[in-house]
Length: 458
Image (cartoon, rainbow, N blue to C red; front, side, top):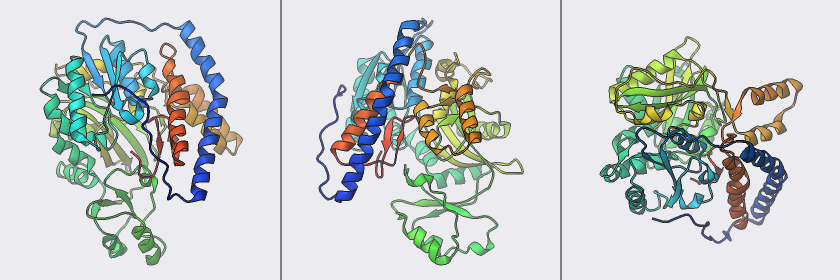
């Protein structure tokens, strides 16, 4: 087990073209400069908050030691706050690469650890978790994982379960839920609505597919998580067979990296987060969705809740699960994807006092917690400031201002303000400096997840 330490040095890649290096240098330097300009405003807000607000201390009747992973992500911070406000002791962890997470400075975090990246050394990762669990006398481990990490926490579960409860799925369940094609097959077998889907292991399967008899178009999605290509919703077939073939052959499709060709159903898209225990839906929220989600507002959708209730009950699941749904014009809801892990929509529970109980209580319950009626939509201020650059009309500006006025920042809380400063002016700048040193660019900054989204990244 390793305590937190700086990013390890890695040499710049000499094979990068000069133009690519120059572009990466400019991109990182300009972004660092913009963050530097925003620093005085952020620091002033945080300084005033630290002077004006004091954190509320609560003593639980039965305080427990809670270990939460995914420390760089806002959803981990939100859970840490939810357990802390209920009187529990929270230990936060992340992989070594993200030792710099600003969330470690939260009032809700009692201790912070770093561990090896699970995909690089699974055994070292599991042993590090075991060491932390034993050293801190952990009662419950709540993984808040990346898409890659979900499976490794399932692999760690048998060993960790000797010392604490692991609020996560077994490996076979995680694999099934994470596999877009296997999920649709399982849901269909339970009588639940899902789009027509085909598993694709070679481009020729798509090129030779007879689209003429289909009433809807299709989209291709990688079954293994792809942080960049997941946003590509190119409709198939393209205008010509040649265009279809060229597009499909541009994708890394293989038996080792299968894709799913899924019926594209027009309608309204939603995302959900659900916390479940023994097949009971303990906590649930549903939000309007988009490909790059950085705004969450709970909406009532009984059809989606019933779909999720039926699914988790049939499988008697215990853990955290999130779905993406399409609701067609006729009202039918179709699950298009599942993520066996915490969803960022849980930030809508920022002011709910019973979140910890929903996770920890062993007693059966008939009530499903939803965000309070007073819960405001959550957003990330620095994402919203960036969106200003895309506003082209007064109507768009009014909408943007309305969203800011109605909502609340997902990271900033007056009585726990330091993470708001440290994420934006410590965590992200250090990641940018690391990329600058390696002449490496990125596709976008995700302040929610706390990382730079890169081709081939984590």
